[in-house]
Amino acid sequence: MEGRENGDRFPELFGLIEGYAGGDDERQAMALKVIGGAYLPSLEARGLRDAKRVVDDILERHDYFVPHGKSGGVHPQSVYAVLNVAKHGGKGEDLKWGASRLFRMVEALGRRARDGEGYPKHAADAALLSASLTQLAHAAQQASRVYAEGSLN
Image (tube, rainbow, N blue to C red; front, side, top):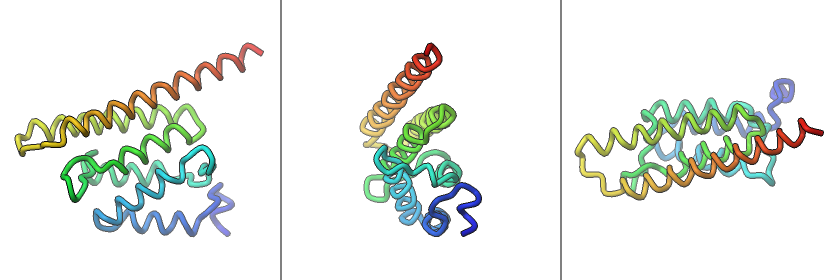
């Protein structure tokens, strides 16, 4: 198993996720959903070492605004994938990565609202991104508190 040598615990699954990430919008949304679901505290998804790269590829392809096919608003799975990888990735750099991506998504949201296309979901999408940034800030605060307590002992 080649992936084991690289620290990837599930290389076949990750290959499938990468394949979906390179597909159409619906498959990209499914890749984001799987990544976001895998990064929950109880699942220890740290074996998906390239998850950030896959999420970045999808976000960049959509200029940081992955549209939801039905509503035209931001696809919630794109937000949840960033948030969960950032919060549960296990490293401080994951939190910084997540904050950076969420801020880019906020900027994309602003661009979309300014384009004058008629964007009825703007307030709901802004609320989702704001709540996600708040969760990330709280996670960062907890991580620095744990780090500070650990360095004092």
